[in-house]
Image (cartoon, rainbow, N blue to C red; front, side, top):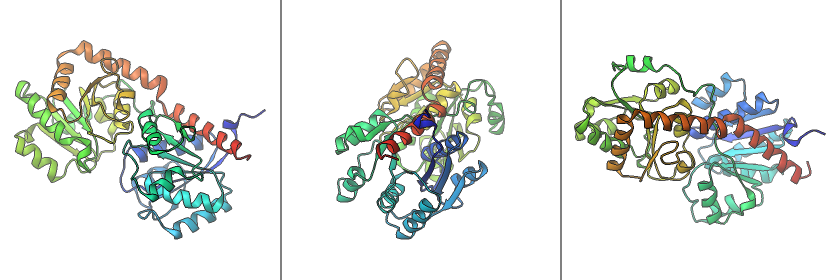
Length: 376
């Protein structure tokens, strides 16, 4: 008898992709993983986006759709035609606008709808959000952490309609032993200079770049040779440069901007920091650092404690606590035994529980379950 998760399925994934974020990287990992397992995958996303280019390079069937509006009848009509012509069995929506489009599409085509939810930000308390999250046309909501699942339950989503599936890391790319010397060479840094990095797009205050820079100022007062690296969309723009200049630390900060060599950047670091104030459903950046074998300091926000177990796989500090962040980073820089122990435990944790293979297997099983419930 064939296991439901082994059935060859046809799945439509929908996501708006204005920039490269954790949601895009996880969507790409999912569709590529499903394709490699023999499933037929179609990805509807923003034409010309980074996700579009990377998915195209992987041979994913792509459909260009405009998803800047949550109510786009033309997108729904076009996708409904594709659902029918390609005999799509499951619709999987990622991010808010895709969720709305997917819900309308599921109502029109009568296909099961799976929605991924990646933030601990509570849905808005309005009719639209209540329909989106409590509608019976949403077959399952994937919460990427228990923290996200808890927020959904508090909003009124039935627990049996939530599937908790952690995001995954490609441990063939993110793994210990990578050589980060090329990154240090590019920025003129000695192999012996302490390098502390933060990988996060600078598109709002929630990511805590100001806390990172204030902590950097404190660390530099004791260890002036330390260098700090910011990487991600907009981290090379005037706001962060001006903030560092006001703190008097601009000469000790590398503003790297958007990078495609994230594994090498992580490998170049002595400590990786992730210090959001809120909304962090899990944190792909933290998972990638752990997988690479870099000691991690992060804030106790959202799903991060499910990854960073304080004193076991990394160190946790309170959100917005620059002094606490500075102290934790300094502790790791000055205690190589502790840093190595935490890094090794973090890598083992990812390899055992948080690989792309774990994630894709769980998602494929979920598809089988929802189709079985629908009698298909």
